[in-house]
Length: 181
Image 1: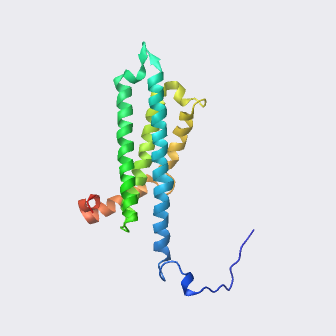
Image 2: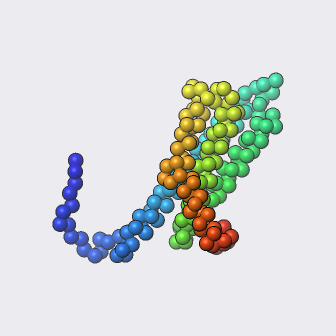
Image 3: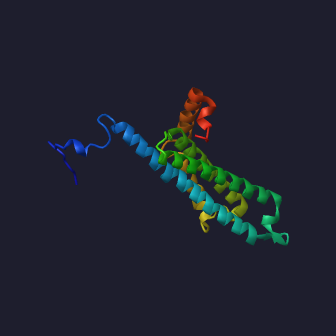
């Protein structure tokens, strides 16, 4: 079905934002969507996968003990916990900035990259913890592993967002990362 809007006249009060501000408004909305649809979802999925990983590490036994007792498994879990926590804090900071009416474009870009890359690393570690079972279609880890890759691509690749972040850092220096205000 096609819709046609020919010869439509709207009153001035139907205008969203100010005259000539449509692109700015669209980009601000895109940023908010990016924060929720990519950043928050990637962090949520990474948190879920971490739960699966820790459950498995507590239940799976090798050499008479849970594999969670092995230092390398503990390191993978600890790295995942730290990365998820850092990404979540960045997400909260960006959301706070939006709520305060502050420019959050750079923080949104940082969240997008950090959250999507974190998801990829967490799921990769989960495949290691689950060993051969992590790659089998019988468990959800295999699906999360495949799905995680797209988070670094859609809604702007990590590389594009890194360019945005770098340009702002080159322009504003360390002030870009000032979380005090």
